Length: 218
Image 1 (cartoon, one colour):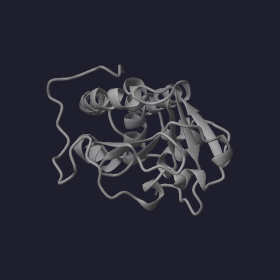
Image 2 (cartoon, rainbow, N blue to C red; image 1 turned 180 degrees about the horizontal axis):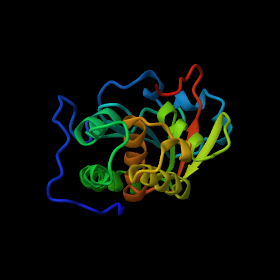
Image 3 (cartoon, helix red, strand yellow; image 1 turned 30 degrees about the vertical axis):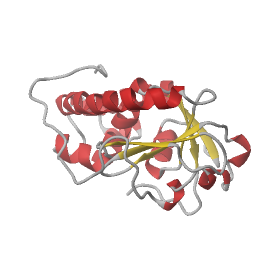
Image 4 (tube, one colour; image 1 turned 120 degrees about the horizontal axis):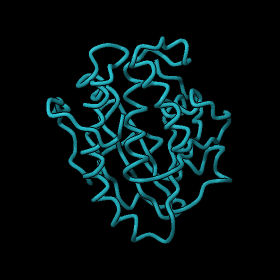
């Protein structure tokens, strides 16, 4: 399965009452400021400027911050989320190869639009961006990819690709238990969306910081 694959019959993600690209809106408490990360155990390795990635059920939010304690300089919203993607494209807990191809095509289009808006904002910064997240769904992907756990872990694009290949085997009929993967549409959607983001935003590494009281996705 290619990240650029498209088929003419692919459905589209449902339209929701969500903010358009680039419009800031209220966000979860952990994402109200980059200080949220600085206050956690990962503070000693936090670098600037940084992007906080929040992959939610109904949308994805990228928030750029240039220095500790500052408000976010820019927020870019993508109408792509785990529940939206799963509901729009996956009929069962384990998607088929065609369903995954259709989802890739649609998500890739949304990521491309976000990339066009985000890159000029990122280029105006003072150095390379460090990508961070505290999302439990993304931490779960790192665990399934075999990344050693801890307060701070790093998930690479290579690890994401290997995990995605295992999901592709399951989509083609291999039992999920053989690959050690959950039979859950939201897992498949989270992995697919993250893969497209890393390919096309692009970024090769994602820093994951475990939040206190974080729970594994159900």
